[in-house]
Length: 253
Image 1 (spheres, rainbow, N blue to C red):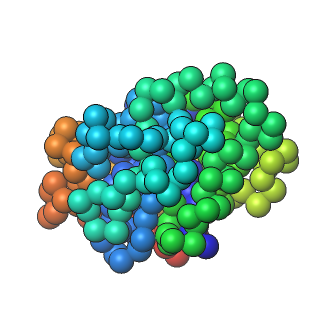
Image 2 (tube, rainbow, N blue to C red; image 1 turned 120 degrees about the vertical axis):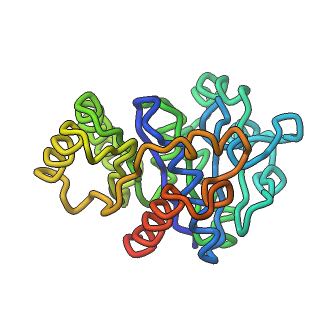
């Protein structure tokens, strides 16, 4: 069975989608069969792996509400061992439609059960909110990776997300674990970055990934070309950092 990981943070702009896409691609390059699930109506994961929106026939939305088979909706990418369950803006409407479905928190879990044996890792990119879509992702997942920007407001958001994970664990998914906290947009020359790291080490030392993700122009450029960083800038610092994260992730789960 594939290991299912939700990349989640209710705060936007923290490098969540960037981390999900690039970790998935790095795992694929390491020979792991990877499925990315785009649970964000903005569809940035989908475009980030080069899938044109006009080519999408069925998406996460249709799968969640039972209008499409997940196997038919999954699309291959041009990247090694990497497939995607794409998203469109229609997914924004799923919040309302899921409300009418019994045991709605299990919709994604039930769909992924049909394909879990075909993959080594299933990476879910959650929307930047603590919504029904995020609850679905957390209910389906074995673990949560929390990409977190190096600033103090992010620390406040972290405690809120931890409470949500605890609630999902108690209500729907007792085996859900925090796989790790991934620091993003890191600048070792800034005192603030060091202060945030020190604060996190007080409470979550064993959860912190060893390699933080540095601020990088190349990381910002890559999605515009529909490529993960390891294909856009193979020898760059961002590629090396996400390779290190992928290696550590394999050891963690």
